[in-house]
Structures are given as structure tokens and as C-alpha cells.
Length: 444
Image (cartoon, rainbow, N blue to C red; front, side):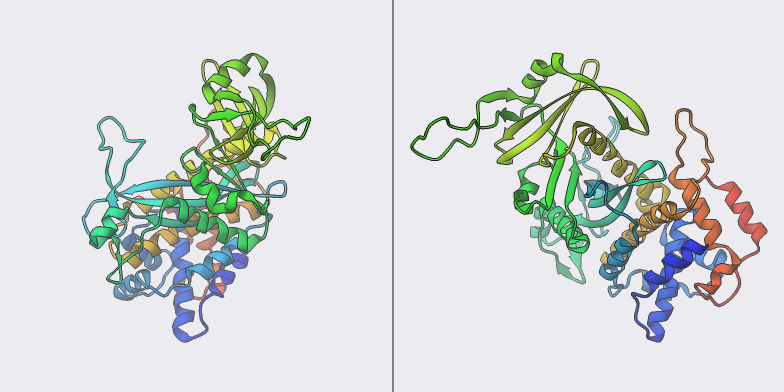
């Protein structure tokens, strides 16, 4: 409760001091907590029920739905405030930003941001092009209580250029068709905004789709030294040796690339015998891996990179980074931590319930996802500030760290405490504790 007392008022301070602003700040705080409380999914109607039943707010449905679809909520200021609430955001002197995109399957033709996007993870009996929203997301990789976590920082809805050219209803906001932005442009815009806030060197950890010159050139190819990439090489990427220093003067410009080494797969077969065992913290435990590293040149990025081949029984993974100061262990561990953005998508879509919302209006859709993303970040900030590690409710063999749902339970208990109303005053008292305790025992 004391942690929420420190966090919630700082977010409420971003609302105006007018009567309506103060009222909206209370609705915002309790809606954010209603998303966190693990009683039901965050469908807008369920949030209204939680506000009325659990928190005792006397709120008319029409006013609440108007609030959830408001175009004037100060999300930019709220996110900057949330970024400031993250204690020690850097890891060994740099910000680790995980970048990826995900899809939210929907039903209904007039839902903002929807289109027939390709789903690379579709099952055999599922459509490869489901009707869905495509969201480009940026998160902060942070070590929280003995485990990696991904804290959402920003997102953008990606919309296909052909849908914008056709002026479809799904790409309109307030009746106006939005301008087209590529995923790379959206990602670079979010990364630049995070850098402008923290003024700290950024290492973007991403998969091979984003880890190329499409994003690298929009970050000025790291010429300022403030941006670096850590990604995965494709098997057909061609590698070159570093250029050798000329022994005597020659006419013309010096060579930028050395001898051709072959593609990633050919180099993996060549270097496999020279791989050495390393102990790294990977996927929640200390593991031994076989790795070989080398400095090479990539013509796609037009700069030297540090490549690490990680070998398994019959396969390999080739990682590269433009930050030449990183060690082999750091490269492997940081890229292994990238998986937390994938588990974060599951938390937002399934546990928080973003995938099941029925909102259609452009502002309602955007606001709802803002609430889901910010509630996830708030949960991890809360976990980082508690003294003791949360106890894992559902034991899993081989896992000793706590789960996201365990922190949500702790936050629910703090938010439903009768003393919490002194921080966020509301019209009447909360329901009896016996009712709350019964609900907490029923949910995961």
C-alpha cells in the first residue's frame, strides 16, 4: 500500500487541477488498478464492474465510456512520468531496449487499426492472415528481483499502406485518414523519444526482422555513439574481414572491407571446432554454451560488428552487435533476455486481457491499450520496489523466480486495502475484506 501511495499520486499529478481534472485523475488511478487486479479480463465493461464492486466508485456507465474514449487524456506526459518512476533503468551503463511487434486478433470489421496481417506463429489449423491489429512495441529490459523483466515503454499501431491509400474506416481517427509510417520509422521514433528522456546510451535488442539497416540508418548508424544494435544474423548474410592497414601508400581511397569470409552458415561450419565453453545466465539459470566470436564487417550496416556463434547439438545461432565493447557473455545474456518481450506480449494479451477488448473507436482502442501497457509497467515497478521477493503461488519444476501474476496479487491486496482511500479518496468505502480475500483465493 505504501508503494502505491508513492506511485499513484505522481501519475495523478499530470492531470489538471480543475474539478473535471481532479475527477479524471481519480478515475484514471482506479481504472489502472482495475486492470492490474486479477479478477477478470480488462474488457471495458468488466473494468466498470470492478470500479463499482471492488473499489466502490459511484460512476455512471455513460460517463465512464466517454472517459475511456476521451481524446484528451495526457498519455505523453503520463508515460514520461512513468519512465521517471523506473528506478535504475540502466544495465551496466546502458539502456537495454527490446523491440518487436505483435498482433491482436479481433472480430468485427470496423475496429480501429485492424487489417489482414501475416501471423508467422499461426498454427496449421489457423489463418496465416488473421483479422487483427499490428502493434510495434518498445520495452525496457531490466533485472528485477533475480530475474529479467520487460517493462513496456511505448507502442504504435502499424497500418498497411494499401489500407491508408484506400481510406478504409479502420485507419481513420476523428474522421481523418492517418498518414502511413513504416515499422522502422515508428521504431526509430520511439527509441529517439526514450533516449531524449534518459540521455543515456541505448542498446536495442531485437530479432533479425528489425536488426538491419532499415532501423540502423534511421538511428544515424550509431555515429553519435548513443545507439547500438544487438540482433541475430540471417544464415545468408555475407561477412567480410576487417580491412588491413596498408603497408605502403596507394592511390585512391583505402579499402573499407577485407577479404570475403563467406555467409553466416559457412562461417559457422568453419568456426565450430574452435568454439569454447562459457558459463552464462540464460533463461533463468546458469548454463554452459559453446561459443566462438570474431570481429567482422557487414556491408548491410556499413560498419564493423562483433559476431558470436552459439552452438547447440546440431544447430547454431549467430548474434551480432554494433557495440564492440560488449563481452561474449553479455551478448548472449542480453539477447537471451529479449525473450521477455515475447512473454510480456502474452501477459498483456491474455493475462491483462487486451486481446479480448471489444472497443472499436480509434481513441477508445488506443486508450485501452495505453491502460494495459501502463498497468504492466506499473506492476514491474511495484515488484522492483518491494523488499522481499514475491512468493510463487503455482510451483513449477526448475523455476524458483516469481511470476507476473504473483505481483498482481500483491498489488490487488494493497489497492483493496481500506487505508488506500486516503491516497485516492472515493465516494464510499470498499467492500468487506472477507469478500476481497475470497476473490483473491479464487484467482491465479
